[in-house]
Image 1 (cartoon, helix red, strand yellow):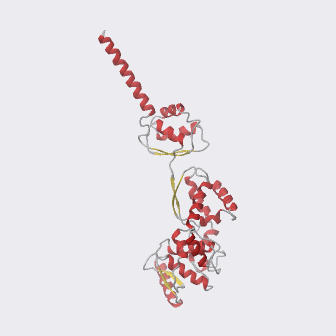
Image 2: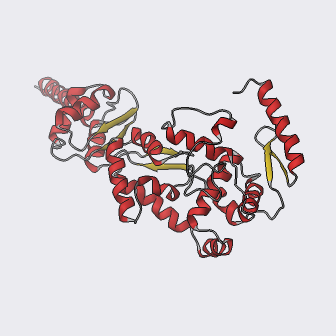
Image 3: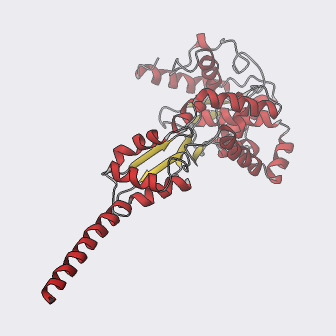
Length: 341
């Protein structure tokens, strides 16, 4: 009798252990086949969710069963979800139901126009570029501008984090707030003392950024030089503005490695060889250093600058036309020696 009871008990414990283990594995055991990010759109149906999850889980049927138990088909939030090794189905399903998605990093570089930037940004968002353009155009109109291109000054070069599901308005709000925070009372005072409009400051900052290659070392010197030319009524004659004018005409599909004499007459309000004064807007997205360089421009007597072939990325500055001619010839000779055309 005792032996029979012992056998029955062992069978019960064994069955309990077996089913308990199955229950644990189904709900809590590691079911991640490989680490990765699962994208779930706003209008996804349950089959789309399962198809998206499928490549990342070991047991698809177990995931589906737990997802149905927890009504994932009815209660899910769109997003970009990080599936990490060690996570069980309960954790995975709860993550999607709660909307605990992972942010993505977005690099805002020195884009020539907003549409270039939008094209890059939307590769990491749920929405396509056309949707972004239309919404940002509307934001621009609401701010009293013509279109999204006029919002360029609100952006600074840097790396930012956003969700895959970010809307165009949510995206812009971050930069709008950053722009407002940047323009402190101190910078507004410097702006007033400069005698420049804010649009002129950003346009000049974009020239400074391009001429300096984004390096902070010479920014204030370059800003001082261009302010000297501007205040003397001289044309700025900045090569990056010519490159920008050509790029705008070719939709940024014709790379210019060397500005030639034939390029200098390119018809465009941004071409500072063809037009006097500061361009009507920035020729690229800028960084904070370049704006500060304009607001804190170096006081110098420089009128001319030329790339220094002996120090790549740096320039030779002078107030002498004769000395500049010598510097320019040395640079042209260097370009020719490198067969840069």
